[in-house]
Image 1: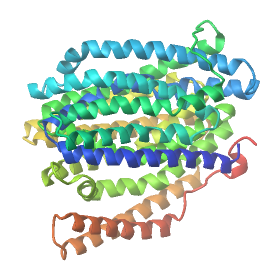
Image 2: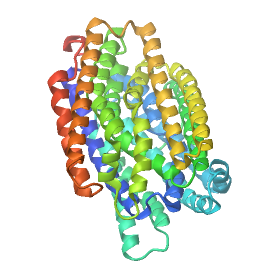
Image 3: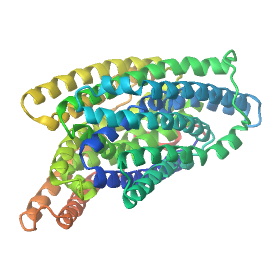
Image 4: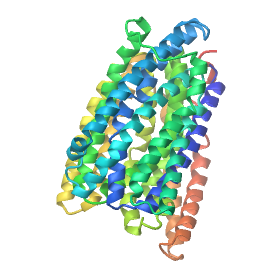
Length: 521
């Protein structure tokens, strides 16, 4: 595969993600306007995160790592008309349906105990509302796991736009449901939002299924665990689930600690995570998702080094200035996007602080999936699991220590900043460990030219930050304070002031490996 073709695939992923994230931003704006950072917002953000545990365990990341390498290898070796690929797709679909149904049912039954365990530090009213929402949202998570199967099939056939734009249907369903509920005076906007999310999940998967069935030539689910390719998928799946499970432990610890931090902390985590995931999805996931099938088809050391290093710089070129923006000017972004109706200036200050802490790890978070894909292309899912265990353990230890210290010092919901800092530290450790261990497997990733490229990007980021800080200071001294128009003008000026020196110095994403070293023909 040529670099140009792979670039088109990454662009397709980015375009799909951009549309879905844009609609997701509209959803978050609506949620913020109607729920703010009140009790109902805490309950909603906690409730939507709890069922996503099974989605994250069995969803896009797991199936991409376990299913795509084996399925892509079969397509490359046997061709699209052979019997093997559809047989494998049908067997994986059958297994996914069984597991998702069982886990969703258990989640509905055990919802009261789950919420009491995870949200024990919250007010009783928050836990009661969260429990009822969780019972609606667990089936949603089960439906969305089927969407992960669609994504795996479509990506393996080099179809990238549809599975990444499909979440727009999920987001728009929630926006529509929330606006209608508010218009007709529904007694609980949080419940209306949860039911809309369930309907949206059906729409998201429904628009992908026809293409996935057609490309995979799958007519119905099957289950054949004794077949060798299916055994390889299952073998790859267990370490990935373990790895994802480790990350979910961190997520659950975040929920428990945020419930102790005080009212508004759970909502602040939700809003800030949505913003920080935007550049991760647009750049980190788009590059990693488009690279995995190609790396799986040609997993030589030279090809992997080329894709990993060039992919790292492709991601970092865009994510580094985004990190600077969110660290230094996250409060402006939060005010422009969220601050209206129930989302007050106090909400902006809280979410902006948590967002800035998360952004310290933004570059590492964005690159983690790409480097994990390097091991997945080698059909090694055990090493990323071990790396996750170490990095998450360290991140949790830092999160718990900082959050409890800040809580004892009287910071209240701002103690959630400690959670974000712990997550950032764990992400950097995860990336460094991936980098070191991959270098041992496929050879040194960084040479002198790569180090010079890192230095140039760093200098560009510092210059952009300095220019943006000066412009903000000058404007805020002469404009009315705390109005939407002022915040918007200052944010636009900051973006323009930072972009100019960054692009002048950095110019374009560094290409360390030339195109003829980048992949197969």
